[in-house]
Length: 126
Image (cartoon, rainbow, N blue to C red; front, side, top):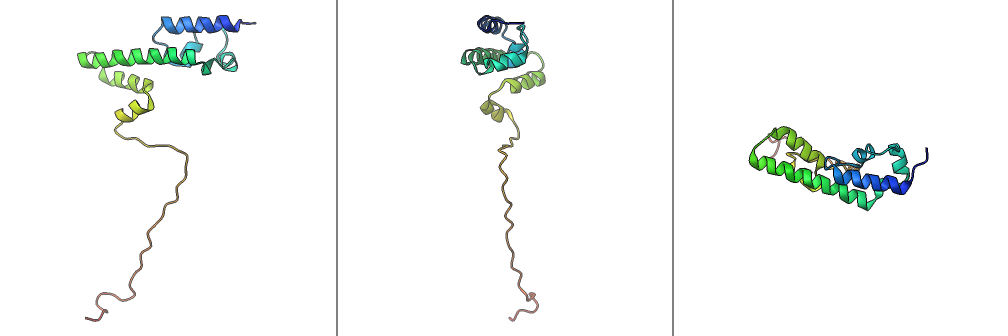
């Protein structure tokens, strides 16, 4: 089936604007008829317009969660998990109790060299 690329793009924009629960390109791709791979082939995932709309939705959800935390309503554990899913790298690092950087770089471990005296303490002259 042939799809009109411009119409599909406009439909994606409308769907993202209408539903603040769309917080990833994968979520948005499910709201239109073409398969997700078609959208990737058209490079919609690289669209600044779609990225900014999705980022706006993420911000709205995070603001809502922070407001709920202040009001002490709902399940904090589930809210924190959702927040971490939507968080930027900086926010995720701030929330983590432990952070490990995965750079892919292999570093050689350098072991200190210890020189042992050949004489024991009892053999050393006074």
